[in-house]
Length: 160
Length: 113
Length: 140
Image (cartoon, rainbow over all chains, first blue to last red; front, side, top):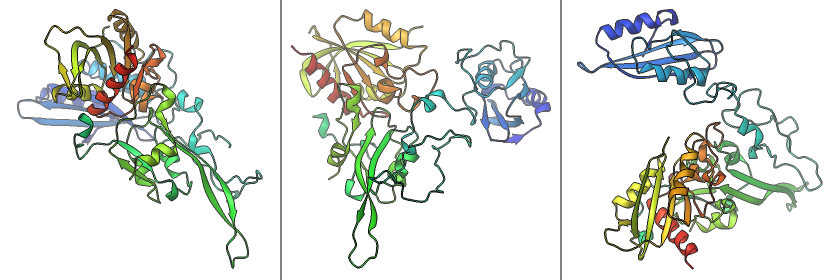
């Protein structure tokens, strides 16, 4: 993968398309914690050369030029990345949500988003085994509370 | 009968439990991505001959896997430090109601020879 | 929007006396195991004139809120009474996607389910075992 500046995103893709990469494959994003990495892939079906470009935008309020004017197929991918990660694709011809209803809340695929269902259900891993019959706790009082796998730092704690 | 057909080598039937190996450490419960394992235990004091103080041991009261939620990733089998969880080829455990998909110690043990 | 559904009469290789109308709604990966059960002969298409005495709606794969109404509509269009079998974790409870805002947490939220088949996905043999059970339960 070749990494490019966010400001050069459309230009880079215009050049790749002009050079023969006409088959658009996918565009998606990855939450790296401190930034969002946007990745897109296209192929030159004549030479089978593959173009995989990546760029970074801020985790909140990220903006990137839409490449839908270059690749019609990118339109749905950008709509999905927009609603799942909260990225704005400037110049997108049809920026409606693709899969989520408008009132869904925080972008679901950001690592900081805690899905409501995971809060509504008690995590079975929160139970501590070290409560004795008489109600007193054994084990180290300073033992750090565990978090479910993938839960963000501010995961709310459930007491026994 | 189709039940007698040999399972493909990569088939994941079900996960069974060796309750006597379980120390209630809770690692499987915590690592399960779908939160489908529940465990209840309590602590007992065991006198050791020659020791000044009794030893604390965890006693497993209940262990259940909700196979309605389980996605058969096998993370619990991999992380158990005491090899208490194992794959078993069994597959005939459908249920007539939602609650029947949760399997407790007795059924989980029955799946291992 | 309509869900992909294939409906046909089948006999179970394990119990050829049984002829069922199987309406299979294949929503995701579990549909491949149903397909495998048919292709490997565990379910045999019925070509003759035998009338099927049981109707089974087989829901395989993740039920999304968007598609759930179509599944309910299909159930109402089948010859009644229908036994609904939820095949796999997703159809039974939402499965590994139980926390997703767009997923229906099991088709039993909308239709009465007679048999829940666990698995992700269940083996084709599990489908046969479940159908035998569903039909057995429906027999007078």
